[in-house]
Image (cartoon, rainbow, N blue to C red; front, top):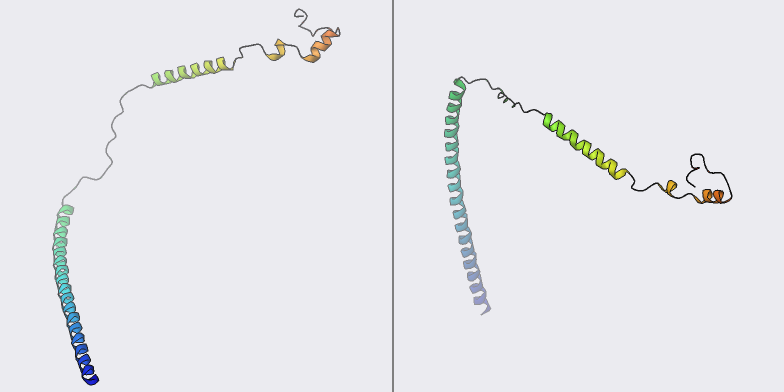
Amino acid sequence: MWRKAGWLLAVVLVLLLAWAGYAVYQGYQSLASRVSALEAQVQAQGETLKALSERLGKVEEEVFKTPAPPISLPEPSEVSGISAWPYVVGLLVLLLVLFLALRLLKRPQEKPLEEASPSQEEARMAGEGAPPKPGEEGKV
């Protein structure tokens, strides 16, 4: 019985290998047909490119045969005669207003601290009978 099972197993294994080989062969045939189709497509595109390059060469020859004006920069357009003096006057007025505003902000609103109240030392000296500083005789 084992002998028949061994033969049966060998036949099944041979059939499986034959089936797998046939599947690989079909895959190879399909790839070969796809490669030949791609080769034909590449060849057709190459011929198209050759024809286009020939046409381009003819067009270039025609273009270079025709005389063309020399390449130069375009003429600059004339500037209209707008005068700049209103801008200069406006700038000077703005600078004057800023100068006056800064002077107004910088000027102190009250008398300086030195003039408003005498220092402690001056008060002590005046209390002890010291003569006032020159120019301050009428203030005390």
